[in-house]
Image (cartoon, rainbow, N blue to C red; front, side, top):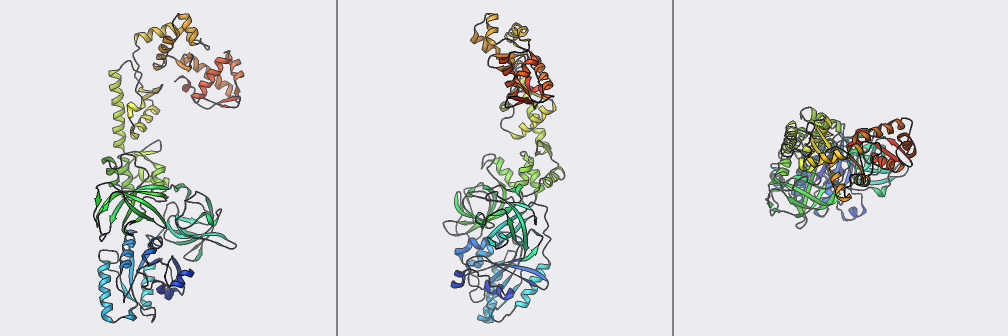
Amino acid sequence: MIVTLAGHVDHGKTSIVRTLTGVDTDRLAEEKRRGLTIDLGFAYTDIHGQRVGFVDVPGHHRFIHNMVAGVAGRQFALLVVAADDGVMPQSREHLQILRLLGLQRGLVALNKIDRVDGDRVSEVRRQVRDLGSGSFLEDAPIIELSCETRTGFDGLRTHLADAAAQTPDREQDAPFRLAIDRAFTIRGSGVVVTGTVTAGTAAVSDRLVLASTGAAARVRGLHVQDESASRATAGDRAAINLAGVAVDEVGRGDWLLDPDVRDPQTGFAARLSVIDDFPRPVRHNAAVHVYHATSHAHGRLLLLDSARVAPGAEALVDVLCDTPLHVKVGDRVVLRDQDLERTLGGGRVVDLGVPRTRRRGDVRRALLSGLDPSDPTGSLAHQAALEPIEGNAFARDWNAKVASVDALARGQGGLEQIDGHWLAPALIATARQHVETALSDHHQAHPDSEGMTLEALTGRDPARRLVLAELVERGSVRVGNGLYADAAHRATLPDDVSRLFGSVEQMLDSIQPPSLGDLAKRLKRPFTPFEQDMRALPAFGLAVRISPTRYYLPGRLLELADTAINLDSAGPFTVRQFRDATGVGRNVVIEVLEHFDAKGFTRRQGDTRTVVGTPSAVAA
């Protein structure tokens, strides 16, 4: 179990850790000179058979960024209040931060009781009870301590050992994440990073990445709670010896991650809780400090529901940062007002990245309001009812394994998958009905039209586009020349197009049809209007324009494609080999093969080509 000590400056946090463990966590020369904790300190000990680690955080308001870096959601809180001072500003702010970061277990150490009388102790106990009212410390034990006389430490040890024995199982089937708070080198071992594991498990020989750069790192060795270990799991304080990175590449604020979930973000949506005693309403576009695990960024707070949020209220917000953070859905952030230099509030991340619709639009607010980080199945179903969910992206955003997301979607979610995206059946049905109705109406209104463009048929609706692609794959909708049509639809040829095709069909019925110029001469037609008229033939599937000056009948192109397949069976073929096999002139052969390349039927590599696609593509 990891215990975070919190409380006002000079209330004895460091002395309590020293009394429990024998370790002075003030390791910096300046800390020793000033008698003031500036940075995080760590110590470990065994208490009644339980391994307990301590994180000593600074109590001075100027070092609040270091205090936040020492807190993780699975930790046990030890709030320290000195009996002579009583509850002070940082006592209150530290408890607010502990609550905002999701801590749920803890106790209070009423320290320095040797300096006051019994009445004062009783008075401060009442202050502590008032302070903890409504929080996870409301009914927590209050242990009276004196580091000078060692009074109360037997009881404190008993409480800590009991809490450690009741620590819930931390095993997680999730990608590994560790928030780094220190990085240093050890002679003979190399780079070591320390931090709290926020999710998943890492073992010796695992390959991970640094979130800041994506640099690959291999786990050479592990210590958990200051003891050698073969693996580290969620909630552990871990020291990880890394191979493949230099110490100057990594530092506090960075993360050690499973490679599949690295995805830096400069923006995210969160459900904000403003603290009760914040002195003014929170305004739109407020400048804030954003604290996430061990990292910090400057940012702006964009309100989505109103122009301001009152103290004690909650609201959906977007947080835009000036530098990337490595947040995931469900992570907690603390926000401090840049002007007032005090904690504003905090919240849980509910969505990542750039909004897919209007930021403050009804559709987006409906989406965000139904996302619950503690309920991935319900959130998955809610989102899939409104928009397609790319499975890999959802897994990355939620720090989940793709297989786990797929299982949720197929199981309790009852979702269907199209091209790697999960959609609710009702959303699929609505999109399919739109596509089928739009095509039917178009064919009735324009019987001579070959079909509709993608934009006209689906707009930019992603669900409609996915469903349309599936209908094409199933054969109920066909696409040609960029136009979509019902598979059974055949456009009525306009009289002028029918007459034109009748005049050129026989001449085009060749493996080497004449050029447009030759056709115009034979028909005694002016070239420019004739060239424009010929463009109607591909629109009705009557001919294929393989170059600006040459058209082929689809059947003849398929014959040439069969020849290419026969040549390819013996290996890559050249222009000359294709010319000899078809009897077509070199210039026309080049036009044909470049058309094959453009359609993805063949691929050119130097002077040779190979068949890589299906022959039907060349006649579309």
